[in-house]
Length: 189
Ligand code: 5GP
Image (spheres, helix red, strand yellow):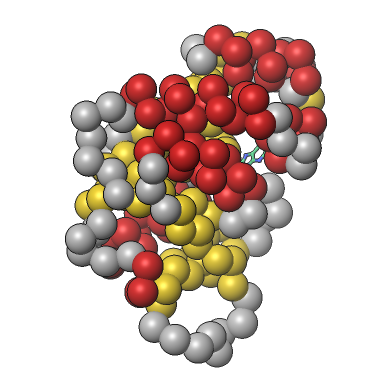
């Protein structure tokens, strides 16, 4: 997606540890006109697929997922990050290793909002090592819902997540794939 790539080149900042900071338009301040274009592009890419729910993970996925959902006219469910063990209610749960924070946390989704009748599109901001997506995939599998595909805004193609997820037969559509960002220079695929 050309508009997104230009935005990344203009405003993205490469940090230590293979982290791309995009706080000015994606992860802190949010560029809603760009989000709308992202929504239209995911709608175009998943045209013809039956999708009745969008699933994401808090916090950074929520804003994007909500704008994208307007183009699919479906509700958004976000997996909650949970640190306490004694949570009330009936939930699906998966463990996720955080790329940016380097710790393990649980994500949970209430069984009320995901079941075998759902056809799910996962939306997230980044795909790095694929841990977040694997966690959501486990939750979808446990619920019996159909995993239609994943829409990722920025995939870091030099990390293993994309290959890992695609090798499981999951369709991944990434709007910008970065193959290299060493020395602060971003190269797209
Ligand atoms: P993964 O689970 O694929 O290793 O990492 C995905 C999650 O980590 C994303 O949801 C995102 O929040 C965060 N993340 C991974 N890499 C980056 C990055 O380079 N920049 C930012 N801002 N977040 C990242």
